[in-house]
Amino acid sequence: MTIKGAFSKFLCAVIFFITPIFFIVPDSVLAHDDAILSNIKLANTRDDLFAYFKVENAFNEKNIQAIENGIPTSFTFYVTLFKTTSSLLDTKITDIKTCATIKYNSMKQEYTVVCQWKDAPALITKSFDEAKTWMSEVDNLRVVSLNRLIKGDKYRIRMKAELEKVTLPLALHYVFFFVSYWDFETDWYVIDFTY
Image (cartoon, rainbow, N blue to C red):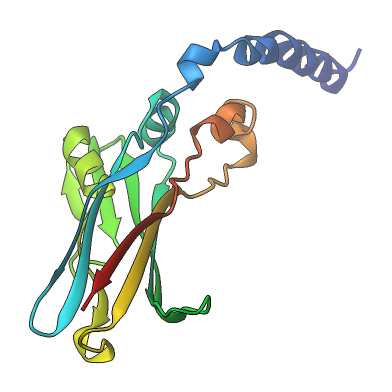
């Protein structure tokens, strides 16, 4: 038997014996509470309307494991503002898509978080709890300039968050086959207000 043939048989045996171990993960380990938005607030300065909110239940054992293995993970946030009317046709004023991305550097043992909506450099910490807070709390997200709104008119703002689908290197597909178990997408949250 050639070395190549022996290696192929060994590889098949490893895949055969290792793969079932990954598929026997109990549902209780994979399950987690549904992600939700909380602490939703709108505020304005003299010139702009801002949104604030927090994503709860966004982290579980599986996405933490992926982050700790150096896989960049992103939360995407969607905010849409409409002018509402008595008819069924609302007018879209703005449509925002922004994200926060976390990456762990095992050599330095630190987390880097980049929040697209902030006009600031990447945030760096050795504390995973602090990094989780930066990832899941959206503050000072500029929605629209107030000169685009009309006094006395009614508006509706919708927002949601989701975990970006992760593209893994081919070698990790077998190890992280359960990546779909840590995808999340919140419901749309709606606030109606009069300017």
